[in-house]
Image 1 (spheres, rainbow, N blue to C red):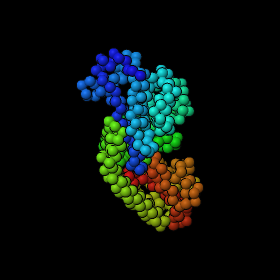
Image 2: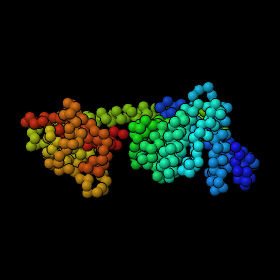
Image 3: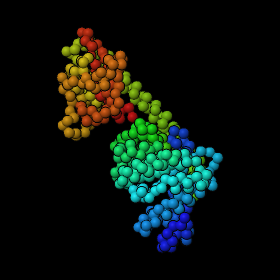
Image 4: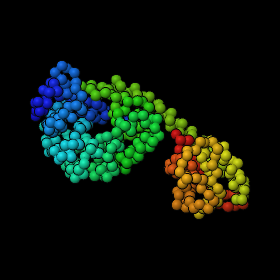
Amino acid sequence: MELCADLKIRLDIASLESYFQPVFNLRTGTVIGVEALLRPRKTTGEHLAPAIVFQEAAMNGCLLDLEREARTVALKTFSAELPDRELMLFLNFSSALLDAGALDPEHILSTVRHFGLAVRNVAVETVESGVRSLDELSQFSRSIRRAGFMISLDNFGTEHSSLERVALVRPDIIKIDRSIIDGIHESPRKRSVLRSIAYLSQTIGALCLAQGLERYEDLEVCAEEGIDLAQGFLLGRPGPTLDAALRRKETTADAHFDVLEQALRDRLRMRSDAFAAIQATVDGLVTGLTDFTARELEAELRRRVADVPLVDAAYILSPDGTQITPTVMTRTRTRPERHPVFHPLPVGTNHRLKDYAYGPGALDHNRFITGPYLSLNSGSVCRTISRKFSTKDGQELILCVDIPEEADQ
């Protein structure tokens, strides 16, 4: 298969080469596969930027020829150098060709088999947001899956990526775009997006891959949030041979994984200590409140909660979920300026549909802890710990304490 001859001459391309970038399992620190990346080499010896070649090929009507030649080079090199173990190969496919219906799953399958590779070890990778035709995307995905390939969605989280397309494609791997990963350790909002994509991946049975990792701090966030796979210059730059890519584990990645393991251990201990401190704070509040009657609770709650550093707000409910004290906000945190919908909830508010209100009774436990949610009291993300207790005059009530989400981070 020959690339457009005039394009090669015009761009001074002597040959097409395939470089391989390792993809790591973040749970084990091992290399599970490599992504094949095209590297056009000029007659002068240096490489030409692949984006330029693809752009020129598209403009000259030979993008399909270029992709087929690049795919052949990648499969030939991979098969010739493949070690005696299971290894995934990630192959990129143009969304423009997919959109035009020019990608032929049978041709892809025959090329893979020609080089003696197992279809199950090849992941077909495309940017679904770049495909305008949902019919073509759906048909291609079904054909690729029937052939036995894995399906990987590249650059997810940008442009027109949508949950509708995820449901349509049913990917095996979702690759999170580098724009989300880069600097994520400094951005709570990016971290929330990452957490949401990770949860989406888990619920649909797909692996989640963080790409574009260049800083250790971002790697640590990805590991903490349960991301399955990762690739990037931090762990290993693309290598000219498969062996060079695999050796990135020893030369580059292992040192980062050693630091990461210790950091995760330290983080777990810190979270455990922080949670123990929060539990002790709530236990102390409950113990103090049991010495008072229901009428005395509001004043005592205000006195005890005012300056507690780990608490956002506290309030007391009746067993049916009705709030019987005002929401007491602490003075220890700067509160964001939010829309008026966020304000301390008043006496009489019915919380009966909230899990912190019905949880202790439903589970027959004295204590319940919610997942993170946006509090109407403060406008901040928090968790609520609710505790059943009895007042001095024998009333059964529920103490609710809002803990800012970062308090146990």
